Length: 224
Image 1 (cartoon, rainbow, N blue to C red):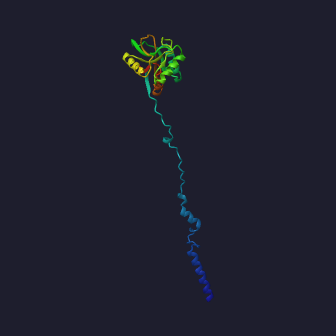
Image 2: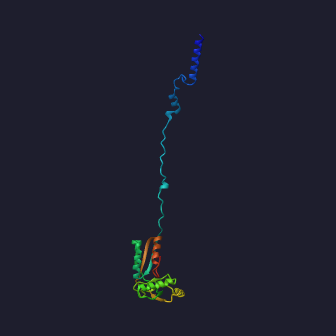
């Protein structure tokens, strides 16, 4: 009888231990492992959320807009002799101005011009030797005359509207040791040539000015 009671109590303790560990469930059949997992995850409430798609920043990738060049309405250069006009035109050719460049006849408005010069040297070589002497004396503003005028192969040192300005230059050259410089006047020459440029930007104007500068007595100005 005691053995029977012993084994009964032993089995009862085993059942209580198994129940306390959840091995026997709670009697409603819903606490097995698959059910608990289902309740914990709430599978019917799950929703897939698409990952965000990386989009390029349109502001960052936009090509920067360069400012439009400032256009100069109209400028003129002149007045040229026919020979100087041909040389001037040849030097303008690399700019490819096309319809923006026009040549026209224009008489000088001055009755006379005053020229400081060195007499013709007889040949291009002699004129270049004389120019070398001027450089040695510190004179750099001069122009070898190569057209068919009376001053061909002479050296122009300046052309002025005012005789006073011409004489001032002549005196300065004398102080530098240029003893062969002379002053003469030249009457206005009808039928000379000028150039007009339209629709150009500031950079192109600077190039035209640089080409014009070596021509004695010629400058660029706004169109009248």
